[in-house]
Image (tube, rainbow, N blue to C red):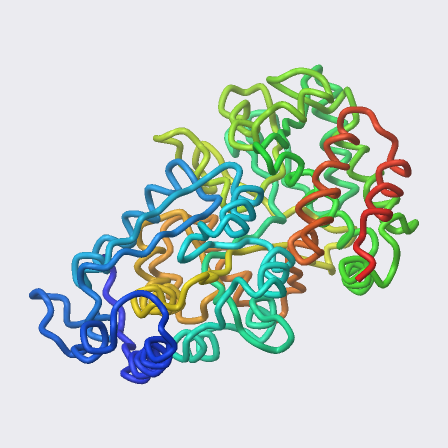
Length: 454
């Protein structure tokens, strides 16, 4: 494990203590002040001194619900092990492919998790407005103030109050490819959209399908197609129009959106381009996003647009590097002088304010956790306390540098910022219908009609 300076702050513990005492006075559940926080300086197991801020809740449990599964989930569980051993707090992690739908069922049914990783600020807003999410404790707020940009803080806030701390992040503007395939075929990494389309034509002209894609994701089917549209909106319409679209200052069926969707269709609806290794255009709707890029390893596919987190989806033993089995290049813009970057992330929201829940929430917002998680591999964060030296693979190193680059024109995933009924509903569904043959204008008209009136 790479050495790094520790930055534990007693003020974090003090903030948790104050909120915990207030909660106890109001009769909330969980540990009492005497058995939970009065002994915050209680002795810890040997080697656990760095976790002193989180002591005093041994024997308690915190439930955690996320959309993150498979090997990524295993790595999250691994990242909590030392915290659990040192604090005595057990974290019960559950990842689900039906997260967005089932979280609502759990919350409305009175069975909300203690903590959820919510990737959509629009969904967070809905739960906050329903009075279900707790404001963050003082220690979490101080971490966010210190280690996150104002924009990331705003994504986790509703009406000026912070309800969820940022945690993981990703850069979505990537195209995955095989460096060895490119070298063998004599292909060059494109630096403009025109060059990308010319490369696609060249590959298709050789008798092969250049692109492979998949948008199936359980109840969240369609989201990879919305990412395509958002990336293209930033390139064909620009960041200012993108912001207007996300905030519904222009209608969803505006000509600028039609142009962006049709630009995506020039790839995803082109039978000469897709869907290598799986079938025709419609197979995109039934191909899981986890499997969608794997034909690259078999030489059946050359290009797959997906986020930095796709590094976790390659089979075990795959080398992700510039000279490895797979790597990724920046999805180019119309000009080399323009470099918009689409990204996303998760926000740690709490549905309970017991002391142990607040401690976990504060720990996850810290620079210590960001570095611990990054050292395990295949994970990044926009936490400014993250040392790039602790980031393992080259794609993630590149992504962290991009996220920390003040000159980058970064925009958060648009569907995640939109009202949940659109961003996690009609937009996902509409793009699935679009892949299955629906016309662009018809789909966008339907999404526009679904936008909430208030």
